[in-house]
Image (cartoon, rainbow, N blue to C red; front, top):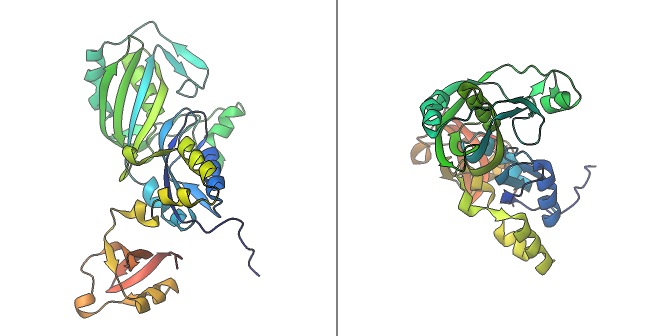
Length: 307
């Protein structure tokens, strides 16, 4: 007999404005507890130092997390020149120092070197796996961590403000797997002045925008005012929130039932889809499954249980 899950069958997304000082795992646990949800996950780790967009999936929405993780992201970050640390941010120990300070013109002149497809070595304190172990676990235990460089994509990198000679503010749009801390470290090395991140805010993940975020404090206030969780459920975004960029196809009840049993659906005549690749199949506006269109048939990849 299957073990019954603890909690309620809550399905949807919370676009959390993560506060500084919490790990992503801690933030997910707090939201999961507020909703008394059976299952929760997040769409891309944020360091404890970082704030901003942490998409949190509850219930059936966890099946769409990979589509969020693979989306592009926007960040605003502050670099402190003159010091490099072993974590590439303020959490670590200083490993190199310099009295050199770059001018805004010197910084602008190197930014193109970090745009496009570039090779980047992730920070030693990162979630990258080395021989099955997280790099940050190895680094904390005192082991030397050798992480090979890998290709990442940076769509844009701009200097937007100079706070003082030591602190410059940047914005970047980058693809999955890009480390902003590594950008700061590598800019500092190229300029010969060293550098590390002192502030970091994620403003966008894929189609999920900064203006749609809600703070943990706001969620806790809603929970305190309404123990029945009705107010919380009103701010929950649909399961399909992460799938806005995927073409949708409406089908009937009989075909929806086949897909939910894991069976393919053959589309013929006028109903045959003209698109290839991945589709979101819906019944009465609710997601039924993510399917792959092959040889005129809908092959279920992920089935949602929202009935």
